[in-house]
Amino acid sequence: MRVLVTGSTQGIGYAIAQAFVARGDEVIVHGRHNLAKAEKACEEMGAAHALVCDLSDMEQVKGLYARTGPVDCLILNASVQFKANWLDVTEAEMDAQLTVNLKSTLSLIQAYYPAMQEKGFGRIVTIGSTNQYRQHPELSFYAATKCAVMSLVKNIAKFVAPYGVTVNNVAPGAIETPRNADVCTDSTARAAVEAAIPLGRFGQPEDCVGAVMLLCSEAGGYVTGSDIVIDGGLRL
Ligand SMILES: NC(=O)c1ccc[n+]([C@@H]2O[C@H](COP(=O)([O-])OP(=O)(O)OC[C@H]3O[C@@H](n4cnc5c(N)ncnc54)[C@H](OP(=O)(O)O)[C@@H]3O)[C@@H](O)[C@H]2O)c1
Image 1 (cartoon, rainbow, N blue to C red):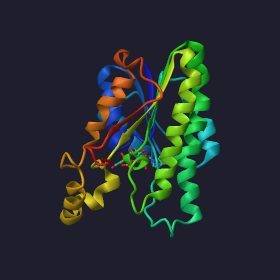
Image 2: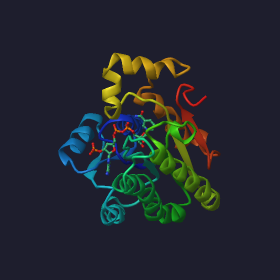
Image 3: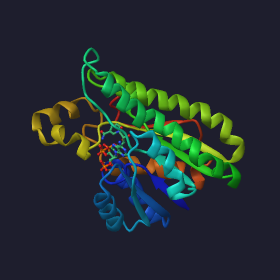
């Protein structure tokens, strides 16, 4: 199968892309604008292609399908996150999170879906967040974009199901990726986060892989419009 994993130069996307490569799929690694970084990740994992496309630029987003051609599995993992108290979130931060996290998600589904419909098969997985369910003092707008993506997932899933296409969301909790490097390397901050996680530890990127692979396997073929939360119980 052909697979595009957005934001697969590092972190969760990298682990997901690596798993598809291990399954024998033709994987496209994607990053924001550092092509050398994307190519390095591609080479490390033995993926087929590497490219960059800034998902905060809708013109670039609209041009991505023409560069990759159709895929069987579209994994929409890339996002941006700005931490700020809800009273202090700036309009620029709102715009960036809205564009990368929500608008590019729908735009890419619009671009990649028609070929899936024609083929009668497709797997679309968005990567959300436990913040869809849990209130974080500095992630109000980020959480809102993730909730909005979940709404899109449920809506689109219903209407594309007759064409053999499933659409689901996987919602990680606190995962040890470069995004969280500051917290993970500060022992006090790390302990505070881990104390709030019923399973008692940060997740690893690999913890998020199984759910995505299930949704893109025959065993997961009857799952659509769903959300799989992988947070060690953090939202509880
Ligand atoms: N880590 C967590 O604790 C956690 C928790 C809940 C949900 N999530 C979600 O899981 C997903 C992956 O998180 P992560 O922690 O692995 O992320 P990460 O380490 O910050 O990596 C982000 C990836 O997205 C790409 N990216 C960032 N901005 C982009 C843009 N404007 N256009 C295109 N690509 C862009 C980056 O590419 P470059 O390398 O080229 O910059 C990188 O490959 C995200 O959707 C995130 O919201 C993460």
